[in-house]
Length: 123
Image (cartoon, rainbow, N blue to C red):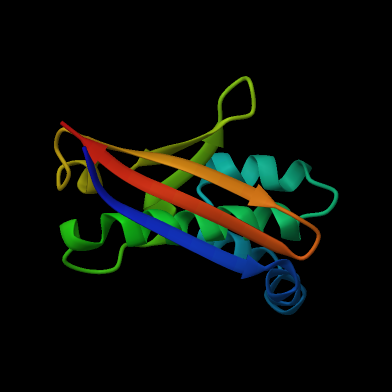
């Protein structure tokens, strides 16, 4: 059963400008330590960060009715399986609010944009 869907779209240039202005402190507000390790290996960082930002926004939108307040981006972790498929890991505090449910995600990049979709599913 699908409970809800979230979607987000962001211009990569907005993220690039934020990185230029605030540097790694901007990335640190969005990325978990594990995501930050991957970010640090990227030669061009803005597309990666834009994708993670869009994906986390989509997840927050999909979780909407199950949350009582906005959750920090760092309680959501987006990693990839060995084949490159993005996977979401949620903080235990969030998982407790959605027992028996899971989130499926997809994200995409193109030259100037990053977009993501999150689907909350369950029994």
